[in-house]
Every structure is written in C-alpha cells, then in structure tokens.
Image (cartoon, rainbow, N blue to C red; front, side):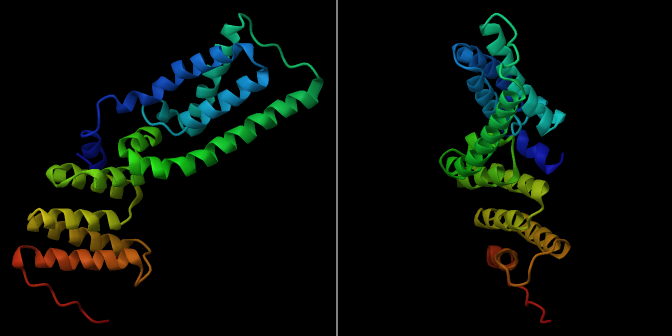
Length: 236
C-alpha cells in the first residue's frame, strides 16, 4: 500500500464523499436565493464553485474546473427551481451580461483569496476540518500529523509519509524521524533519516537551508537513538 492510501485509511470513512455534499448544499443555497436578484445567485454559485473545486472525493477526478462548474451549476439549478422557471437572460443587453460574468469572476477570485487566508488558522484549530476542505493536501496532512499525540505515533508517521508522497518535501520524513526516535523505535527512525537524506539528494534543497539542516538533525537524532554512536559527518 502506498503512503497516501495508508494515511487515508486512517481518516474517517466519510471523507471521500464530502465533495458530493456540495451538490445538495449548492442546490439549497440557490433555492434560498430565489427571492433575490440574479446577481445574488451568481455570487453564491461562484463561492460554492470555488469551494467545490478544492474538495476531494469522487468529484475531484473530474478536475478542479469541472468540479467547480458543477458546484456553481447546482446553485443556479436551485435558483431556477425556486423561481419555478428557468431564469431568463438578464435584460439590458450585452453590457449587463458582461457585468454578471465579471461579478462571477471577481467573487470567485475573492473566495479563492479568502480560502487561502482562512485555511491556515483553521488548520491549527481543527486539522481535520482543513483536510476535509482541501481533500487532503500535503500541508494539511502534515498539520494533522502534528496534532497526533504520542499515543497515536503510527497515525502521525503515516500522515507524514503521505505528506511527503504528495509534495516530496524531505522535512516530513525528518519530523517523522523525531517521532519514531522519541518512541524508541530506532530502526524505523534510522530508516526514515536515510530516506530523508536520499530525498534531499534528489530535490533541489539549498545547502544550509532550514530543510537541509532539519534532515541533518534527523540523522543525528536517529544515530543517538537507543544510545547509539552518531556517525561522523564527511567533510566536503
């Protein structure tokens, strides 16, 4: 089993189906907006579409653009059903149509910008919520791993490995090394430290950077695990 599948096996069983909720929620939002203007329906559909584009699950295989379009379409469908007729093209000619399209784009971009600002603090308060809202991106899985206490070490390591499999950053393996070393699992810690060192050699990590130093520190901690003698670093 690959690291991502192993980590996802530890997540709630309902997580892969979260994206499907955007359709009924979007439809309900459109229905509630039926007494408002078409501009309101367009704005709500753009926000739902932006959210839908980043959720994981079955809808994600269609791609972000298609998933976002379907999420927005659910809102417009609810709006149409709520008014008991298909919304007619807005009166006022090309200028008003262009204004509606521009409004959709601006609200979509605002929703995207808001998502970027809201998710990091949300991830600190509720790591699982961030995983749900992103479909399981690498950084949210890493934050979820940090939230695991010592009694859930296997889960933490699995999430760190999944994060590394998703974005290839050696720091995830280095931090997992600390987790295993602290738990006294020295052979696993040394294997992770070696894997992190190989990852640093494959990816363009600047010498002396925080990530490179973290991997070096992980190797030292792994070597000291269980009272072992650390290897002498080779000089260039």
